[in-house]
Image 1 (tube, protein in one colour):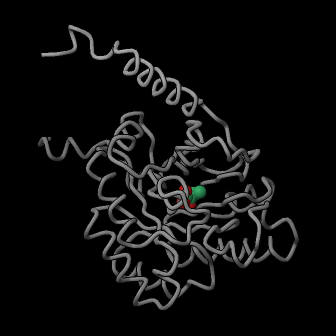
Image 2 (spheres, helix red, strand yellow; image 1 turned 45 degrees about the horizontal axis):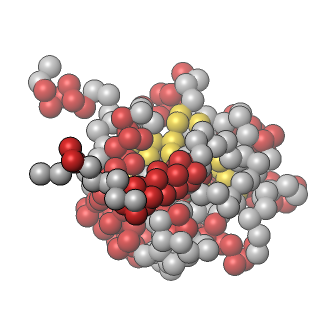
Length: 273
Ligand code: KIV
């Protein structure tokens, strides 16, 4: 086998994710927005990297995901793409770049694919964005759906509480999920919905269903990297498992550096030329 072909063997594709679902192997997914952390996430063997519009919150400090622009998403996605060797990279279409009409949705998706080299796009919603999904897919761009808590609609719902707890909302979510599969989405994310409903969706759908705050009976899990590393301290939903407390570790290291500078301990003789 040629080197070029061998290098591609372990790459995660949408087909690999489908095979994982069929074989009962859970899919791991995390966000990343920059070269350095994306490299670590990829080296750690995460299957899917999401360049999420949560960059608007964790990278830029906005209260919502609404302000981030298409240019900024492309900047983050390009940085991530320079780092990865194996993961499938999915990029969020930002608010306002796909809801207007399907041509705009296609041209936003093409810009992301062409300028960053990413592998797929993700967008929020079901029936409302049907035409956009059809047009993006018709250009050969893989689409991941996103249902349940859809942060780009925060001004409509007013809160980030659990979604689809009432029968009518749960029914619409199931219909939307089936529609996204029928249209040709390769996967969907379910955010912050009851575990029993997520279980029902993932058992009815053939495509992989990735959950965040959607319980264990789905085909994979996604978390925001900065949340699970404990860089953000102010965000503690029930579904978040913190694997590190990096805020304290980084702050400790930085204040030790500042102290060393103040007391003229840094640099020492061996740290200078
Ligand atoms: O932008 C994001 O990080 C997301 C995840 C919460 C799924 O969409």
